[in-house]
Image 1 (cartoon, rainbow, N blue to C red):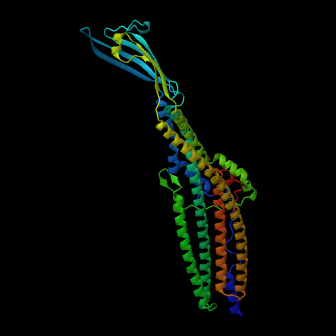
Image 2 (image 1 turned 60 degrees about the horizontal axis):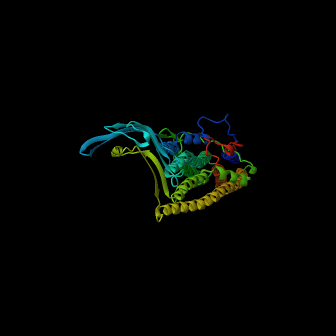
Image 3 (image 1 turned 180 degrees about the vertical axis):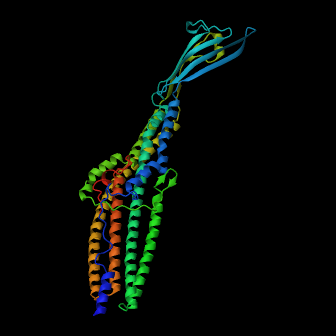
Length: 489
């Protein structure tokens, strides 16, 4: 009878009624967040502030400013000082005549060129043209395109496109932010899951070690067979092996996560940081407005807007290509630029020049290129619209299926715990073996891992939905869906 009582006490000591793999229930709030806890908000903050790819994309703003300045540089006023002298022989006499011009040259985006200044004659020069009768005269000139180049011309087109470069740079920054945030959030939840896997394995090892120690003491007292001690020690080694694998997975995921945790030029490896509890599951109604979400995504997703912007660029080039079919008809009125003409008394020259390529091969080639690009952009736009719509639908499906998996995994975990408790009770009564107890505990461990994996996939699906709907194009913080109902579970 005493031997039987000793055995029962030992069983109660090694088979506690409460499972060590209890589900987390601490809410994720600012009050209970530990300074050593790494949150998704902190990860995205590091991405926004110091990630080199995002900071590199922000240099597109500087490039856009440079493009605009370069385009404006073609229309800035130029101060010109021109000194010319020629040696002429007339009626046996040698004469040195010339001029010195000082003027400001200007060019309008519409293709009009003009200048204004002053001319001083050099030598024995008299200009009778236009009743000036002096070698010192004001300068006024203009070159006016009448057909080709009027309003629509390559320089004006470049100015139009450079004015859109800042918008293009902003869209490229948004695209980089979206992709980096999605990658960071996905990797973060992978890291959280592996941390929780490791914690489960540590608890499992602790349970097995306590049991092995108790059984060893009982075996020495003669109350337990040596076979059970061997079984218990074998289970300890098996769980330690799984713990080592879990620790390796944590190392792997934390090094991947470190690629998103930049501080200046250094990477922050979260070796000593803990993972927070999983946020709670949101109601399905938060994700069922798929048509509204798709319309919003089609409006703000940078991939779609970049195609629209590229179409604007191509439309500008298309206008220039069509304008090149017009004859080059130019009217000009400007001072004579040859000193020898002063001998004839000429100060200004007037003219109209007409130029028209016979076959128009250059213009037709440019037009074909622009039309071909326009057609390609139409197909690309059609694809992008469908792609974004499918991204939203796919993200919504991922959330719904992840919710179903969470519910199923929770139920499976509850059933596994019930079986575990029942097996412990049977073991205390001597109706089962230690092997079956170990198997029930392994099943609880597997069910708990399944629940963790389902919760992590649910959070990844939420991040995918945030990306698909364009929720991360501007804000450096977790917006909308990531903040609603974030209570721990």
